[in-house]
Amino acid sequence: MIRKIFFFIVWLTAIGSSVQAVNSNIYPLIQNVPGRETMLLDGHWKYMLDLYELGYYDYRMNEDRNGFFKDAKPQKPEDLVEYSFDKAQTLHVPGDWNTQREDLFNYEGNIWYRRLFDFKPQPGIRSFVYFGAVNYTCSIYLNGKKIGVHEGGFTSFNIEVTDKLKPGENTLILKVDNRRHLEGIPTVNTDWYNYGGITRSVHIINVPQTFIRDYFVQLKKGTDNMIAGWIQLDGATSAQKVTIEIPELKFRKEVTTDEKGFTTFEAKANPVLWTPENPKLYAVKIASATDSQKDEIGFRTIETKGKKLLLNGKELFCRGISIHEEAPFRQGRAWSREDAMVLLTWAKELGCNFVRLAHYQHNENMIREAERMGLLVWSEIPCYWTIQWQNENTLQNAQYQLRDMIGRDKNRTNIIIWSIANETPISGPRTVFLRKLADEVRSLDNTRLVAAAMEKKELPNGVMTLDDPMAEYLDVLSFNQYVGWYDGLPEKCDRVNWKFTHDKPVFISEFGGGALQGYHGAVNQRFTEEFQKDLYQRSIGMLERMEGLAGCTPWILTDFRSPRRLMVDMQDGFNRKGLISDKGIKKSAFFVMQEWYKKKMEEYKNKK
Ligand code: GCB
Image 1 (cartoon, helix red, strand yellow):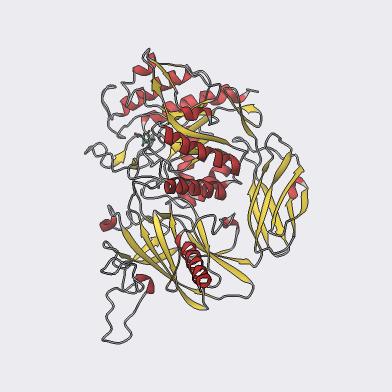
Image 2 (tube, helix red, strand yellow):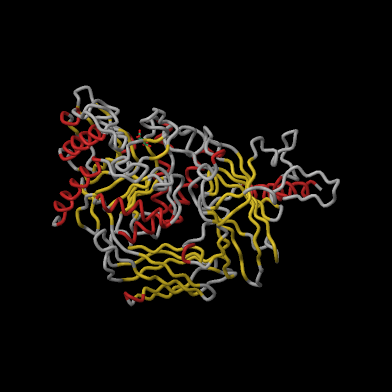
């Protein structure tokens, strides 16, 4: 009897945990979703605003077994049902809710979403529901049953629903909660707008019983003529043959997986290396007995040598810009290919070969378009400012977000830097936390560099430096500095000298200042285009004197919404540090930076 009770408890715990957290341990991410034929669930979803979470808790605050996820409808006139998805209004998915309806603009709380769809189960086919991103937490219900919860507003996740879909009409319901949490990643305090909702596409992915779930195909670290990686099948119960082919390179390799469907491979090849000037991608085909995958993959090397960054062995200067995932012109979260094209075309116009996608993983369109356009990428997780360093759950959350970021994008050759944090306050626990993240990155992907946006330090003798214990564990000395904006006036840039003790490339991950586009005045008048222009001119002078500078990503491409920016008539809820306004108009500083990048490009053209 005691044994039976024990097993019952174990079973209950197992059920509980499989419902509780959808993470890459339970449902590993499916690679290359854009390359699969999927059933897209984008479009108009019914929604209900639920300020008091009454669709979730009963009046004693217990989880209600008959919450809104039941999608109840009165059957008889006397039935009491106090909500109706059928009569509710709609929100477009993907999209944040804030910019779709005026009354939701400042809403932080719960919204229920419902989507009905027809489905025809087919024998031998497995199905997964895939979410590009939902901010910040969500509970997911299919046909009245909870199938998972997820935390983290910018990473993708999928859940297997093979046994939960039914023939005919299916009901997918999400409870999305975008409230901020002290223990969250990010925490309550950021400098960007907390757009809520199902912000990226939703797909049903249908795959064979045994399918190619994941793969990693890049140049082997330290070589430029050896393509190496691994393939993971899902559903395999015995060893299987898998082939990987790159027809243009006449590269073909057949390998056999272990009984869990995993295999590594490596073989010689001579690809034309991916560069910003020639962003060459190859069609790569992976095939198993039951499934096949097609992707476009490029090959390049990235390494550091003393103070130099080397791309394909050649010295690189990152002519970069920081970008938030905010839609040009209409504001709100960007998600579409068109949004990505507009933002990245501006970056190209500025003369960039590099973009810092701040402060969280951006949608896949951004990364893939950047790759096609020849833009190198810094990708980061929202481990930003005052994280709860001693909270184990917070660490685990950061680790999942990191794994999911790398999980989705590890085959994108334009990503050369994984960043683990931004401007975090130095302390023992913080360094322990960040070291674990840095180790995690290296264990998942040793082909790229690991960085964090750290902070500068001014020594009593006026010398500026980087004095952060994390510098030792990271590959680049990357830090944000606002000399001339938060720290003195622009003329300070002319006086500052920088000294670094580490023999590593220096990278300025942020600098800049605000200006309201079209606001003109004296050079010492804050928020004028003249002030911003002068600040950029002097910052460039300072950067030119910085030994070992390997690149920079000024803050920021476009003005973006932030609740921290309250100045009426000047900010009006926008961080105005953009080189381009929220209306898409370039400010004077844009052209200063453009001119400098032209010069840098010439300077580095013939570097070895
Ligand atoms: C920073 C932050 C960035 C802010 C920026 C600012 O250092 O990393 O998220 O938006 O400063 O404008 O103050």
